[in-house]
Length: 143
View 1 (cartoon, rainbow, N blue to C red):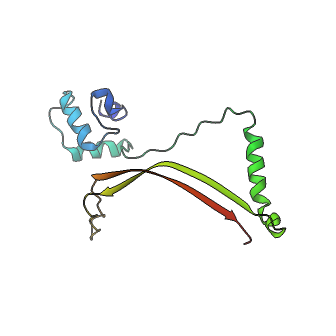
View 2: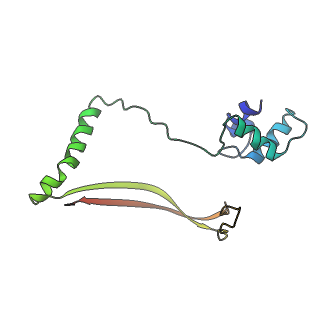
View 3: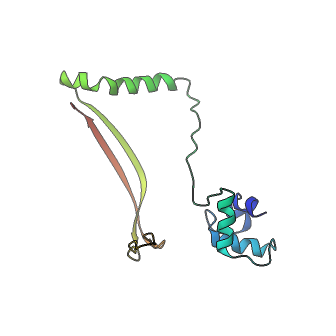
């Protein structure tokens, strides 16, 4: 039951969190009566043995449904492959990318530095300062 719970979204259990923490998972296990008592540390050990990582997430990339996708990729990669040759002829190649809605935050407390046997620690609470957009330009030039 622990593993099934850990693999379920916390909101299914009325928890206002985006992902399980060991503490929240332990509380939910006892709330549901799965076990009478269990420590957070023991829950972490069980999750580790089952190779379940609450904090890990990878991006899911679905294949494009665009029928011209491969041709578009070839056009773009060809442009970069020929950038040096075209640069020698006086032509510049620039790549522009935009990243929108970057959250600007300020930590409430300073980070605690690492010490022997301890990793550095960062307070999870922060002050939000709205969002920013970043536009980056990379000019391909002669190497």
